[in-house]
Amino acid sequence: MFASRTEWDLRPSRLAEALAARRAAGLPVLDLTESNPTRCGLAPAGEGVLAALAHPESLRYDPTPLGLPEARAAVAGYYAAKGVALGADRICLTASTSEAYGYLFRLLADPGDEILVPRPSYPLLDFLAGLNDVRLVPYPLAYDGRWRIDAEALRGAAGRRARALVAIHPNNPTGSFLAPGERDALVDFCRARDMALIVDEVFGDYALGPEGEGAATLAGTAGALTFVLSGLSKVAALPQMKLGWIAASGPADLVRRAMGRLEVIADTYLSVGTPIQRALPAVLAGRSEIQGRVLARLRANWKALEDRAGRGGPVEAPAAQGGWYMTLRLPGVRDDEAWALDLLVEDGVLVHPGYLFDFAEGGYLVVSLLPPEEVFREGIRGLIGRAEASR
Image (cartoon, rainbow, N blue to C red):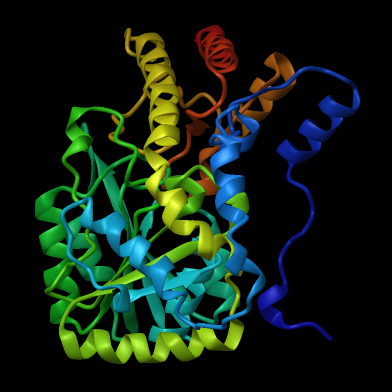
């Protein structure tokens, strides 16, 4: 009766069951997985956003598949502030970055075609690929003091049915920006194989330290057909407003053809609400205030983590350059799920086990840097104490 693409294992994981049991018992949880800014005390100033949503033209329906012209112009202005000249005609608005991936998978790949994706990376890509009948082929990131693309493994991953390569800049969860040489190499790689380059930059405004601050956007890339994804979920800390975008660049004829096809795809769904499109110029203009507060939280928690994990103890914190997440490496006395279960059951600390992000090796945990500082510090203290007790 149901499509095979929806044959998911819907049983709760052992970690989910343990979390439900703890909450049912009324026991406290130090949640180091929380990445929703509206639940971390980091929502933007409500008055400005609500006023922008009250635009009188919001009551008028003017279906424009790629997005209202003034909204797309606001996104082009966002890139202009980064030094990239990008016409509004190269912007396609979507309801989310997830929807943007879906549009692009449909645009670029037939059923059974392949999309190259980094490993480790965000688990949602698996679901998006399955729902769009494409196959993900991972290419590994290797750590040598910095997370880098394994160029030889990438070349071996690109088969004859590869249609696009996904890069995440900075990566979720490793926090690694693409180095300039890596960016150039990926563009050359895609151009030589007639593949498109899809670059997820949702965390691009959040550099944790000086090394990440110069990480340029790939919007405006000329050498290969390139689609840069982002949206209000992270840019303005407004996940509930449901607006993302695709910014296309590359050889002019390919971009023209791509935008024509994207317009038909978008016209089929018309999923972006009018009020947030009307509000978008004001929301983007006011993004610096909320980004400053988010960055202050991220950097404070990042420093607290590095101070505790950088003393030769049992917990390693591989270097991160940006984003809202950090990876931790724990001793190999148990796997990552066992570590996560022990931390939750014994210490009330909730973390992501690394296998959710497709780490090739065990012993990795992933934490969000967004929780309130007192919650984060107490949780990290419990995590390091648990790791020390295992030695």
